[in-house]
Image 1 (spheres, helix red, strand yellow):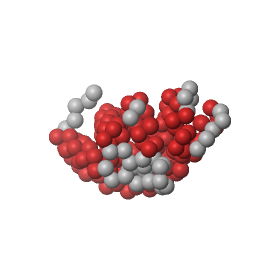
Image 2: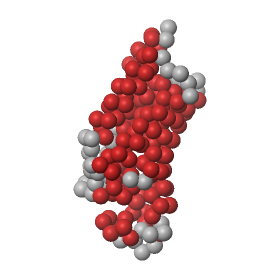
Image 3: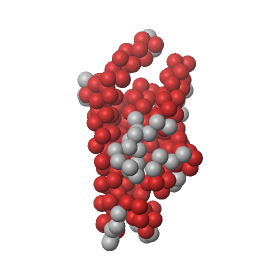
Image 4: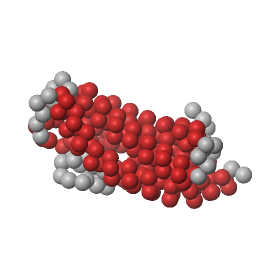
Length: 200
């Protein structure tokens, strides 16, 4: 993993502090649904400014905080069922952090409008997070969906289970994707100027 400068470590610390705050200030669309988070935006910002390694570290912290909150102060029943599983809590967030940083670096020369590229990569990161949570939830609950379905509806087949999970998490995805697409470039664009001056 790459070494970070003092400024980058300071920025990383600030973003981690924001992740801690957002973890304990949850937002929900409707009772019982998983919380909407701005964690994906914080991780996307860090990944764009600090690269894939920084994004991976922030994604790991985000996932770890989700795991901790699910065990200590879960905001909803579904959060307990999903995010007490380390795979569901950690892997999607780690993938998001690394992927956003890698994609931003990969396409910088092709998409020369930083704000547009920030929006695109933030959207992809949000999609990956939701998609992987849906996938892992399905894989872990497909053999015995009773506990999951007891609180959130009924499904007569594994196909029904998959669509139930998709609908529950998909409602959050729409809101999270819109906020990521709008807010990420608004924060990243001025921050990139600061970061570039620090490295001159």
